Amino acid sequence: MASNYLSKAGLSQLIMIDMQERLATVMPQPALQASINNLSILVQAAQLLAVPSIVTEQYPKGLGHTVAALLALMPSTAPVEKIAFSCMAEPKFSRQLTRDRSQVILTGMEAHICVLQSALDLLAADKQVFVVEDAIISRNAANKANAIARMRDAGCIISNTESIVFEWLARAEGDAFKAISKLIR
Image (cartoon, rainbow, N blue to C red):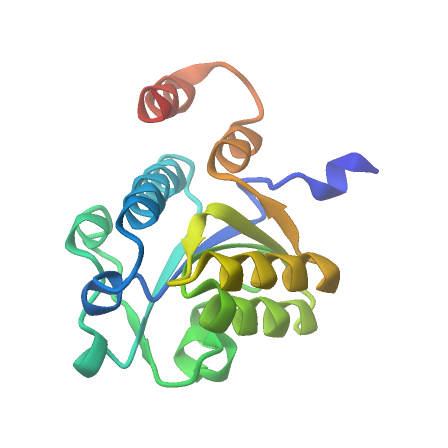
């Protein structure tokens, strides 16, 4: 039964929600840097393990584009522009959501707005939602804590970067394990 709560590389899709330059300037900087570092690990691990990724940008004309350090890790990924808070309200996002991948790994900002609304809509679409607590952020820590509680109560699995990547790996062997181990250090 417990294995139903493990993320699996072959079932997962990584979603990076609205990690945008102008929005980043109003975030608590130590928490922002930690989120960017963890997202960097997740993005690179996803690429090593063939986990598809989707990047979204909320109203990029006003909030800017995805943080350059993260976008540089995903050169072939074109961000999905949106104006709705929930990713699921954007048809282009829904079309990119891989149907044969039942698990969605959610990251990004802001936890209590776009991440929360996307998580709830993804649950309603019968996806198993993993929220990566150390790779989501809000301007206010209390809002992030409230969002995490709401998502957990709704049925999301609250996890962290290292748990996700090592669940994806499943075994301590091979080139991907060696590369991901270096990322974690």
